Length: 351
Image (cartoon, rainbow, N blue to C red; front, side, top):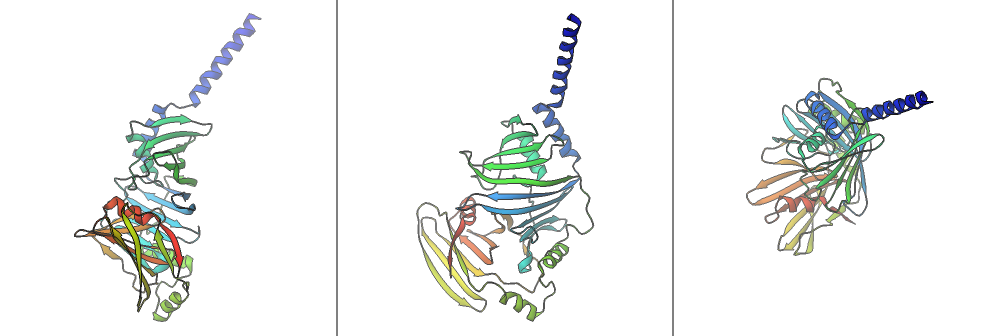
C-alpha cells in the first residue's frame, strides 16, 4: 500500500511539473517575443476592426502585408472584396491610394515608425517590450498583455494585446481610453508568419491597378469612361458635420457654392478656435500620377487615412470618405485638436 501511495505521489508531482512546463512566465514570453522581433522576415494578416468612437460602431476589414525591413501594405475596406483605401510603404516613399477615385498621394514620411499601430505585429511587440508598466496574465489559449500606447490619438492610451499561446501571433487587440472603455477592437482571423511575397506586391501602380480591376473600374480611362463613372456616383450629396468641436466653438455657418465640378459646401466654425470644413462630392480622376506632399504626412483617422500638412500657421487635413472629399483647415487648432475634429466627422445631413 505504501508503495502504491508513493507511486501516486510521484505521478502527481510529475503531472504538476509537466503542467508548469506548459505555462510560460512573463519573462519567457518576453524573451520569445524579443527573438521573434529580431528574426521577423514578414507576415500576412487579415482582421476585422470595429471603431466605437461615434454614435454607431463602424466595422472594417483590414489586410496587412509586411516584408522586412520596411515594406508595408495595409488595405482597409467596408467590403472585404473591395479595398476602399490602401497605404503602402516601399523604397519610393509612403503612398495613400484611393482606388475607387484613382487618387494617390506620396509622402516622404517615416510611417509607421514612432507611433503605435494596432494592426502591425511588430508595433504590438514593441509596445509590449518597451512598457515597464505592462501587466501580464494567461487564459487557456492566450497570453494577455495590457500596455500603455503611443497612438497619435491621445484618447487611445491603453491597450489589451492577446497572443496565441501556440506561436505568440496576435489574436486580438483592444484599445481603450483612460476609463478602460474599448474604443477600437481588432480581431485577427488569419496570420501567416514569415510569409513570402512576389515582385511588385508593394508597387504603387500594381496595387492601384489590381484594386480597380476588383472594383471593375477603368484603369486607363478616356474622357467618356471617366464621365460615365462620375455619372454613376450617387446623385445625392451627403454633408457631414463633426460630432466634436473644441470648447468655445460657436454654431457653424454653412454656404453652398456651385462649381464646374459640382456643389461645394463650406462649413465655417467661429469662436475661440475657429476652423473650416470644405466638402465636395468625390470624382474619379483620369490622371493617375501620385500627388507629392513633401511637407505633409499620412494620418490615421480611424475610418480612413488623410494627408496632414502645414502652410505657415495653417494646419490642414484632406481625406475622402463615403463618396465625399474633405478639406479641414485652421490657423488656431493644434495637431491634436484638428485630428480630433477630423475623426469626429460622423453627423450627416442629406443635400
